[in-house]
Structures are given as structure tokens and as C-alpha cells.
Amino acid sequence: MEIRTIGIVGAGTMGNGIAQVFAQHGFAVILIDVAQPMLDRARGSIEKSLEKFVEKNRLTAADRDATLARLKMSTALDQLIAVDYIIEAIVEDAEAKRTLFTSLDAIARPEVILASNTSSISITRIGAATKRPERVLGMHFMNPVPLMTLVEMIRGQATSDESMRTASDLCVRIGKTPVEAADYPGFIANRILMPMINEAIFAVMEGVGTPEAIDAVMKGGMNHPMGPLMLADFIGLDVCLAILDVLHEGFGDPKYRPCPLLRRMVAAGHLGRKSGRGFYTY
Image 1: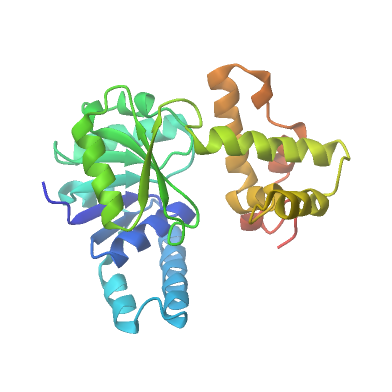
Image 2: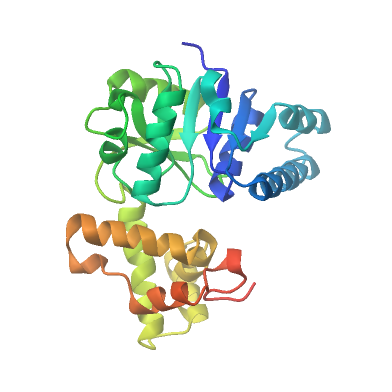
């Protein structure tokens, strides 16, 4: 089946970035969210991102306009009945994703692949909520999606070789590099990244160093482009906590126990850049 139209569910940071990239590469895109204000905010973010590409001569004004023309937004999930491929990018919550995939399974044509942008949750578990687990897989895009080239591809227990090939080929068509990971908690990226971020938060809590000092050491000493605490703010401290909880529960290993300071900051609503305050003030 030729893939021409992409359905994306979830108009947050990841969803609107994924929508932008597919629209830039010539695909018709339908972006779905339950809340119209989220869709309005997503369109504004996409317009701002595309304008930056135009200013840097990476995109012409005509290409920007054509990209926006290929992008449709809706609050109605049944708009996805005719799309060729679906990517879910909602909140990082297993039950919310399973419920959505059950609905998508009932709406989408039988041959359509259902992909999740989950950063840590079991694809096998998500796929089991459908009648097409062989066509359910993970496509974990990196943030910011328009700039980062890696897509972590996750094969569930029942995912077919054909589905993985189709998804990987689709990544290449939009200028991304697919790298396959097994279906273990956190996959590759977050199984390695989140313990580092968590340890940096423990270091703050224990007074080993200020956030500025810890980030400076990792940038200047390890050549990281961004320190772990600023990165945590960028990702969202609530997202970091959710992923660490998945790792801790999935492996039962205390080394993944989320730092109490992280829990306290999330409880206080200090979620990082999106709330205006995390380890830094924005």
C-alpha cells in the first residue's frame, strides 16, 4: 500500500513536530487532538518553526505555504478512517494509549499500521489492545522533531517484519534515520538517558553541586551539547518522572528509583520549560 496520508493523534510538542516533518516531505497530514486550543497552539508552533527555516534559507516561502496547505486539524478521531498510516503521540500513560489504540483499531482500515511515539511503554502491551498486533510498532521520534534525525524503532512481540520494513522506509522518506530497539522498558534511548538525568537530580538534592555547576561539568567535561538538568527541563520533568516510573516498575531494580526531589518538583507543578519553572526559570 502506498502511504500518502498520515494521521497523528496528539497535538503536543511531539505531535506537532511529527506533523510538521511529514507535511514538509509532501504527505497530507491530519492532526487530531481532543482540545481545539491544543490544535490552535500546534498550528502556531508549526508556523513559527517553518518561518525559522525560511529565515535560515533552509526552506522557501512557497514550500512553507505548501507545507501548511497539506496540514489539516480536527478534534474528531473518525477523520482518520481514510488515512494510510497512524502515529499516536498522546500523554505517556499506558492505559490512555491502550484505550486510544482500541479506538484506532476500530476506525482505521485493516491494513493500516498503528505506531506509537511512546518513549518507554511496552509496544507489546499497546498492541495487545488491538486486533492487529502485527501492525503495531513504536516510532520514538527525538525532540525537537524537525531537527533531530534519529527515530527509535521498537518491535513488539507480535510486530511483523513487513510492518517494521514499511515504518523504516517511511522514516527514510522523511529524512530520518531508523534504529531498531527491542521492546524493553525505556528501549535504548531512555534506558541510558533517564538514569543519567536522575543521578544529576540526586546530585542537586544532596548538595553535590548547583544545577548550573552540574550542567557545566557535563557540557565542558563530557562534551554534551546540553546539560542533563536543562535537558530534563526541556523534556518536561513530568515526562522524566513517568519514564523513570516505567523503568523502575518494569525492571524492579532500585537503580531506576526516581529521585524524591523530582517527585516533589512535579507535585509542585515545576515541570520545566513548559511551566516556566524547573531547575531553571524560563
